[in-house]
Image (cartoon, rainbow, N blue to C red):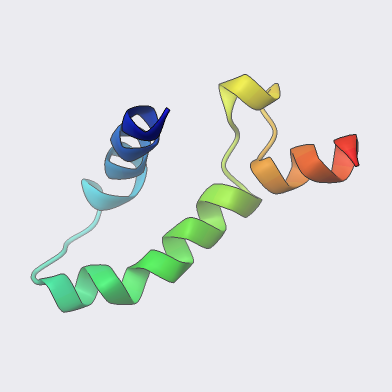
Length: 58
């Protein structure tokens, strides 16, 4: 599961951005995690984001 997350995170956030140094990556992590959890659809969650799925289930 962790490997799948890392692969998805790299594909959707890291590889599509210009990242000249580690400081840039660190400054973007909060924004990326927020997008991943709030808006990005996940196949395993019936194309809902994790936050949307939790709101629907709970």
